[in-house]
Length: 112
Length: 116
Image (cartoon, rainbow over all chains, first blue to last red; front, side):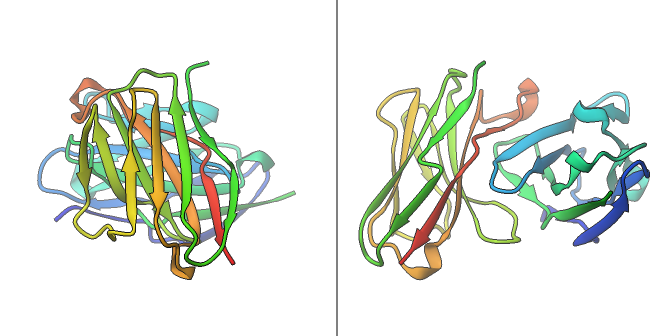
């Protein structure tokens, strides 16, 4: 069965520091992978997606993620965090159908 | 801009009193989804429409129903809301059921439902 694990429930970083949010998935074939961000009281906004091809994916707002098949990971990174990045981040996996399996989310706090 | 719009953003209802949440889209997508998201949890898929075909997730309670009168609109009806139904309800769309078309799901801003 497919599953997604986001090991870090909360992460706190200082503004300007680098960020890495972890995501590990369990799936037998090549997955479709997504990162979404949810600001307080808002819906989910797609940051980036991996379907195939280049394993380093660039997204919006300066985020990138790297698909590592050998580690079953799809970690999200940003070189310099801004205060407006404070939000909850969800990793999701799909087998290529409409069914998304979401992780439980990582809440990011940014210190001024 | 093409988008997914949910109304209202906040809804308060009484225990047991039917409530309807609405979603509209200008993306002209074939598929519309309803998710329930409780505090600090991942979104949970309740059901989806592919065009007019309705598909219920196996563990979605009968208390939740949906209507899709046309391509643009989809409604979530909660027949007798209980305290456990207080949550954020997210509507999403996608062009197709298969992601191979490189079309991810697009989400609205949600409706936060409170039960008194």
